[in-house]
Length: 309
Image 1 (cartoon, rainbow, N blue to C red):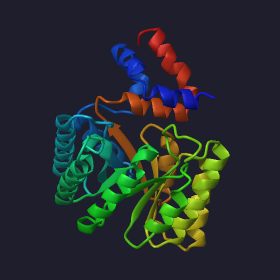
Image 2 (image 1 turned 135 degrees about the horizontal axis):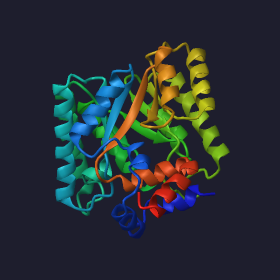
Image 3 (image 1 turned 90 degrees about the vertical axis):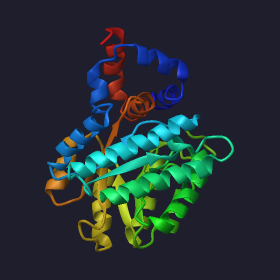
Image 4 (image 1 turned 30 degrees about the horizontal axis):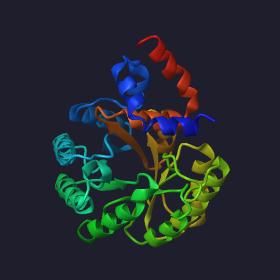
């Protein structure tokens, strides 16, 4: 019952300003976001890689409506990629990029600005010895994001895609992207979407996830199974066996701070496991979506606000 209200609050500037001015308990934030600087991101990545897991770093920010802010986001990615290279953490650590953070929503030529900026980040990633995955956002950006992905893959075929199982269209998108060399992260989706474009019930979303996963596992691409659901993890393993996939021809992905013991168990059993680590000071929207996924955390979060930290 809390999920939809929390997703609405994730888009509320008024609530965002209130939360950001309160001394929120560092425990709830740092559980999901290890720091604000590139240095903190590199250090968190180093710790995860040291346990045999992989990493995807995401510099937090979205819905950028200012060209200077979009350019600053690009520079942040260039800085962290340089830091990863110097630390010897590539290719075990890649980066995830939200196109709305690099100009996609800018009026006029936002599509071109986002494409050019994403190309700059992809070039830096390749020079650093690693890859980029384009995050997927709300459904209004899906076509633009997939168009940019297609253009980027002409020069950077290693660029990863993200598809969201709660959208009605996603099974078709999976079929179109399940080709050799195509890296596709399948997640459930974490935005508030209308019934006209997205499944609303958990059971319907889960069923869609399995249908999409079957397509990806049967295809020739590289599935990236982004879920914390134990049942879906087991189903992914069974599908990999059915399609005679070796460990390493797919991977599991989980968020920093969520089910770390399970992440380590899978890695210790020979599975590739990638941890999605966000960083930066634009943590509010990300935090609210994580709370929507795990409403049991809401009591702790609200208690932190009430006690001022």
